[in-house]
Image (cartoon, rainbow, N blue to C red; front, top):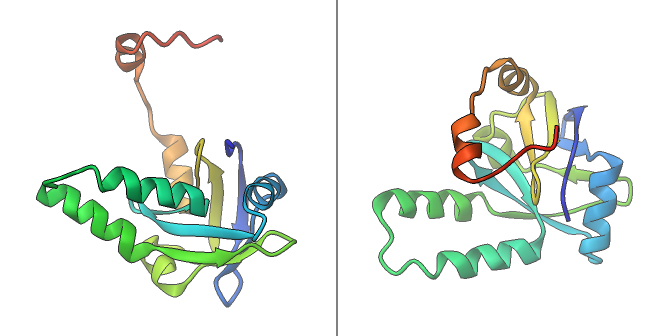
Amino acid sequence: MRFRGHAHRSLDDKGRLILPPDFRDKLLSATPEGKLVLTIWEKHVIGITPEQWNRLEEELEKIKAPSRQMQNIIRIFFSGYEEVAVAKNGRIAIPAHLRKSGKLDKDVVVMGAGRRFEIWPADSFESLLDEDYDVSDELADNNVALPF
């Protein structure tokens, strides 16, 4: 399952948003019970399936003596954890603690990021697009040839 594309959305007064239809359909087909895990990653709210969360926990348990930095990442992951229901129309409720941690106000962007989706404040998303990126060395170092 890959999340692609993005959509501008508005949170309602209760912190709910409606996912893009493609995201909703992927989640509801991957999780018949209609559940989604929200947490914090790189200062943004992310959405993954409960299965992905379970794999995340298993992977993190492999670290036998985590550094202070890794302990903090684990704290952020686990303290942000919230399992939410995905309504048939794609509406999800973002809990207050995640809205605060992700600096989410009224206008947000829901964006695909491969195996997860992210929810960003709209102004942060626009800033992301305004940046100049040179990743040519990293692509070359990893033997990646873009087909365009």
